[in-house]
Length: 514
Image (cartoon, rainbow, N blue to C red):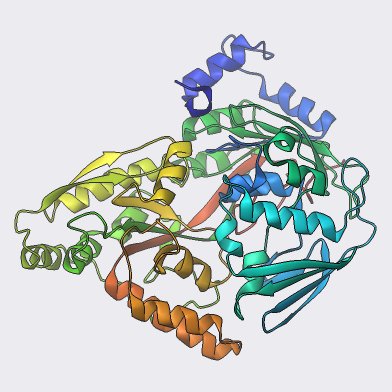
């Protein structure tokens, strides 16, 4: 099995740690107290996610935990401000939007990790790379850009093809690299250079990514000396790593482990209401999902309340639509199809499938809380209306590429870091924008989405987003499920607050007493 796709069980993790010479007390058990002390002494934090960085191209990723790792060494012009439901300046001090014109005033006195001054030329080169790099997954975010200009060293201007009320959302979070690096494409990816509070140190194909504190950071320096991002796919192995001192922060805590971890005085468990809606995608390009009655039947088959209660153990809240309440465009009146398996059977019969049908269903593993267990329950629920779903659970690196290329008829996914409903609707449901929901097209929806992007009065635009949302729910190319509570566990002496967007960073973290 390729190293980047390697999975570790709890037993294998402990065996690997022991064979590597980790300090022991009782035979066969790691010494967490000693390892914790070593981390504090070094002011080092090890973060373990279910996914890892398998490329050194920052534009070839769009998964929130990985975006966070890159965001520790490279910074954007602007970033999301979830409390204000807007944006805050990072490398941009201010900005103006007027019709098709966007103008940014850049922060002065900022230097890259190699000492080079940050200028508008770096922004231009970075955005050009996003648009032209064949590996870029972020090019669709800049598809409305007509031309870019650098009036002076600290000014950057964008002319759009058409006026767009969501233009700032497309700029949000796009990290800036040094001009020379951006123009070299793949060559420079071996040693990424940014302006962030941490400097790149090393990377392994196993997904491990190491950064160290930038002593010359233009802003408030970090208090943590070193951060290691690790990929440990299985929940049990991540927990074993935390309890043994091999990790300091872990994500996606299984609900049944929360109480036990809370009882450990060396650990702290924190939960935050996340922004990520979890949903099933039903791609009409795959028969019989081209029949709207079949898609609606599937929405009636899913008992989300049962899954939340018995699988997620209450660590989520059900969605009646595809958006969480914190997102602009959330419609409190939106209603997805209710759980009604008898209605589901009826719709299948009306669609010409009284005996159901067979289809492949794909789910990631280790990406979302209890995703494998959730998938198994959904397969069972689909069977009750006659749909025989063949469960496939590819590795995340494969899944993350394939679903974006339209290779899956039915799959479980989520869309994180949302601040505006337009992002989700355009990325998944607008004709020709993506292959994520292969074969789905509704000209009326396209008209509404075009109109809301041309509407700059917030209340009017919000109503258009409501109309778009209700059309999507009626067509049922996706089945809303829930918003998960993002649950993290970390060593108790680490002072850190989890974000709502899954972007775990140590910019403002510290150890107690240090």
